[in-house]
Amino acid sequence: MKYAHLFILATVLLVSLVVAGTAWLRVNDFRDYQHQLARRAVDVTAAELGRRLAEQREQVELFVADQARFIGLLAADPANAEVGKVLQGRIRMYFPGRFAFTIADGQGRVLGEDPDMAPGPLCLEDLRAVAAGAPARVRLHPDPEPPHYDIMVPWRDGQRGGLFFISFGLNHIVKLLRLAAPPGQHLLLLKDDEPDLIEVTDEGVRGSLARDGDRLAPDERARLIYSQPVPGTRWRLAALLEPDLLAGYNREVTALAGLVILLFAAYGAAAWWLLRRQDERRSRAEEALRNWKQLLEQANQELRQLAVTDELTGLPNRRQFYELAGVETKRARRNWVPLSLLVIDVDKFKDYNDTYGHKAGDECLRRVALGIREVLKRPSDIVARYGGEEFVALLPDTPQVGAEQIAEAIREGVEALGIPHASSAVAPVVTVSVGVCGMDPGSRLELDELIQRADQALYRAKSAGRNRVACCPPA
Image (tube, rainbow, N blue to C red):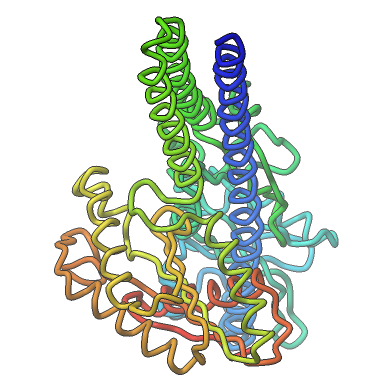
């Protein structure tokens, strides 16, 4: 009897330690996962924004080279309304999102300007700085309204030359930040020489944000977890955690662990009481102990299952996917067979949540997950929820051409579900975009590189209009 009591006490203490340790690991894993999400989102988005601005600069350079004659004529005679009208029309045709243009000489003095909007103080400051040899780096100009940024390039027409710039709005940058922000996080552009000053967020532009002031509050500075400078700009892209993200998750895990420990303690107390009963009831107490052990094993199994399963869809979560995918990648190399990966993203899912609510959004994700699972019928196929509205599927022993057919079947299957999506510009029903990447036998491509290539293919599918499949070259 004495040893039995000691065993129960030790078991309850051990289980409490195991549950507490598991809860601690889950909290740390969640924090590390949020940092990984932030690092990936900031690095990819900063590079993409820099690439887009570089492309925009190339377009302005090509335009200036093509229209140098008209720019030179207007610079020589700013009052020439006919030339100004022609140049304005061509700028509108080439750059629909532009606000204004300005022509300056090599010393930064304004020779001609858009009649709709004269350059503001910051525009003129940048103009003089670039004329003096400083690099033309993009930054936010709040005045004159609306807020904008300038793309400034040199021009030359014969012996005349100087600087030419076009002012653009920031709506496309706001949309990019909104699309790239991970769940539970916000992306924002900060001024590089004033790191507390917010320039652009995934909700809008400085001066129009629904907040008190345009600078980071002390608690917001504490929630900044990663930042990266944006090439060719005076901005730094940063990831900001939502206020209660980590604390809320900590509370949930702690409450669950406490409930499990409480359950074990209650059963331990019951077993202790039963063991103190008379000797003739020993068998009954032993039976209760066996039941308690069975419940302990079941609870541990449920905890292990929770650690690798997405609660909403029932699919493997990202952590479990990496474990299974790592095994399949090694098996593909060992058996010399192809392997393919799909990255699946629900189109315009934020708009769906905004229109129908998060409860309907959760049901939509469950139906999409079921639709994907119905297409992937082989037991060896792995489909998992990668995060937010994004899913991944690993197809062992499948070349890229076969994976493309499966991806198309998934796309058609989700569209055939007929889930209404009135706020989508893609289709009246919920659709998905799919990025496909295959790995040929003998390829030394690592799993993260395979995911990155498939993610790039997904980006091309979304850029091409969504509700489609895009493939990367086989590796």
